[in-house]
Length: 117
Image 1 (cartoon, one colour):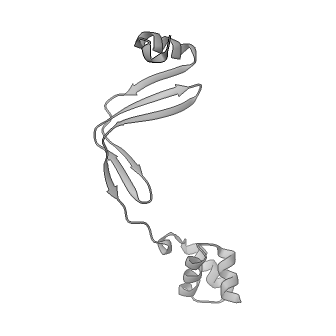
Image 2 (spheres, helix red, strand yellow):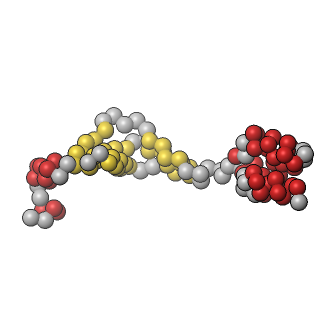
Image 3 (cartoon, helix red, strand yellow):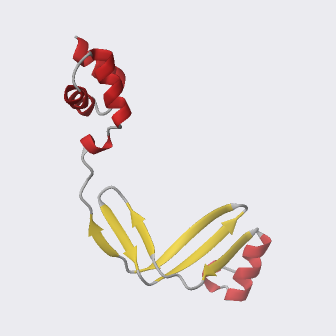
């Protein structure tokens, strides 16, 4: 019998024999999926967990609100410790060290080489 023609009880029995457990999470209030450019906010959603031999898969059903996010500036992601290290190693100012780190996308060694050559 094809899975599309199986009744739900037979399908659940077959999945149980294969070690697949499916259950719904009750009373879900909100789900937020955040990327660097968007937020997907589900205020009303159905969430199902499928556990197949220890590997859990979550399925979300619903209509999200999609909100665009401003991409974080690279200068904001450079740790202060890295700026201090580059400034100390090169004898340059913190502003020069930060600029070099931004230009080298946070690569400390490359920033030091850039400022010393």
